[in-house]
Image: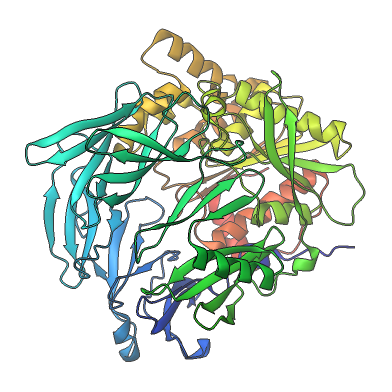
Length: 635
């Protein structure tokens, strides 16, 4: 029988993660715990990991990402406070680590601002391009900031309500974009006279600049055409025309990703994702190396994570659906491969469960794609969990998923459905989710339940629903609008009242307000008001029958604490079973592994009670203290 895998192995601090090689090839950096909190470490490329030194010491919140300056003199990272998403940009000099942990310099010390990192110019390695909203919380002005000195110089004041900036190969500001009143996008060109129109699209389509190939031409991703799927194009700034370059060779999914060489700026690969990702190489040398690595690692997923300035040395990750992976050093010149680390070496990958791509039809015969993870060595039918992704305008993909594997280990079949409104399957599929929150988008999940039952995979009376953000909303909507389908639900930072959700969006999302109204409904119109009320679980909480567990980060700027408190209060008013955890040091999800494990301990016990799966009974005292502190309502 498959053993119960300790929750700490899934959700505790990784041993090491985020490995990068410095541009000059002299150092390898990575993230690992320092005094229990994830921080950045650095070692010489030839040194052992035991010789690495910490270069940050943040004991309030884990650092989970960073990057090198082009001259390899600094490591830069962004950090907020308690999940408030007011990200500041910090620089730290790793050469000073031998004398103790060096001080991190806040390059954006301007109060409650949100820094947006735009690029590192090749023309001056001491500069970084940053957009800041210290003048107006809703709109970001563009600056050049000196990494060594922290001084800044204004490039462009945002008086045109711009939401993105784009630079030519010489890092001169050339383009910007802004939202149009109909939720579309307009691309603008910079000149000495100011900004002028280039191209625009309606809210049913989009265009996104990717990379300049010359001062007058750039790659774009767009679905601005008579075709359904998006494609890779080239935008000519002399005639404002878009030339079609490439679309999915199989004609099944949207354009996925363009991979460019940072050394030459050339397009070296394109990526498309249907069930799994497929890479189409444009550079013969990179393709040869990629094939070599695929064969070396038995055709596992290969990702080029970090390379030197000359692109000859790389840190690559190797992973699959049943393996969170390993990081390797790869030298393209001599084909040297060296194992650096495994982020979770104690995870018994032989006990993990394959993720299988599936498809089924929904209420109106629309084809829904998704992924199914079924417990190993267990006879079906088993209890099941529908786990809708957040967004909702993203999609689930194939690969290692900690929650899916954790729940499968506890005995649940886990379905991750790319319901309508998800990206990647064409603009018709995306736009078919407009104003369908809690309605046809929810039907797509309900028919996922039907699929699991008809295929004999799950027990009809023992299916739950669990998700975060929009997935949390879908959990509340599932329990409210289809109360006989689910035996229980778990909502993580899920909105319950669409009126208050739209009223409380962060100021820096102002540019997206028209898009929210298009996709969800306009509360200023009679039709929109009627629809939003009908789709808000809060106003219909009396319809809920199944037990609900709610988790919230108290600093969440996207889905405010009031969203969770409203549904909890409404359920209490009707004497319905509800549990509520509020984490005072979290935002939109769990960044602190201790909080994540505390929540998971409560969650797996809740699911076992109502669905009959397995759970890890012992809860360490340190986690129990957190549970006691954050529990508002017990269930």
